[in-house]
Length: 354
Image (cartoon, rainbow, N blue to C red):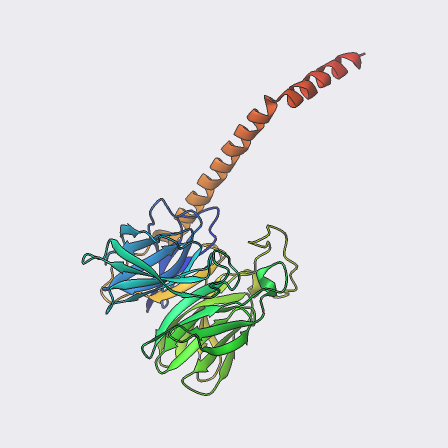
């Protein structure tokens, strides 16, 4: 089985936003992305036998069967994109916009490469728009209905204080599950509706059967894809050492190495056992989404599991950072205060010479 995996918050290497991975061999192939990707990738969805990949700041890349980006679809009104869903019967893409807690729908033209209409389908907080109060973050279709997840209102300064998350049916606003700690990746698995509860390190069955919980040890699980009727693969991100919202250091109580590894793990829904694991720590820190590659998609593995591309991208990022640092230092050196400091230093050195 082969899957596409998106990596979010790739600040140092934002164009390494997604790769295809063979779950049997571990072989990998990076997906090229348009230059407009600035932070990394988010939601994935199948469309007409190929893929869609959301860019975090906005916009969706469309791929062909050779995993080449052939179009960039705009997402007017949506920012901080999370999960996406293509519905063929509507020829439309649904997009969760965490920036303003809105589920958007973008209708496509006949070629599927242009947006011809956009509308808001659901808003978690209509009275206080343009705010990330509820952190709307994923969408899925189950039994013909759309469902979304959200973290709920925070009772503290960071996302970690959002402890009353829920899963909502879009058509009537009914909460089908609540009291969740960071629900992500609502997922239709046959007759069951599952959700990844990230801060609880678990996958939950919330509909289509009696409630059940499967534990995922270590890290921050997010992203799920079915392998067969009784097995799923779950993405697990390394814990953030720094708050993405505040830029301050996180207080971590983690004690296991798995908390700081990026992984894909196989979960047996029949037994609850975690089976095979694919470590992708060297590729990225955070997994956002997993999606099965459509049948017939070309898969050409990168040499050495894609590491040369990762190393080259990091070196380029480092060179750009050093260049920016030198430019800032040169600019500061030309300020009156810095010139006076330099002159004072020269005078002081002359006066102290023997």
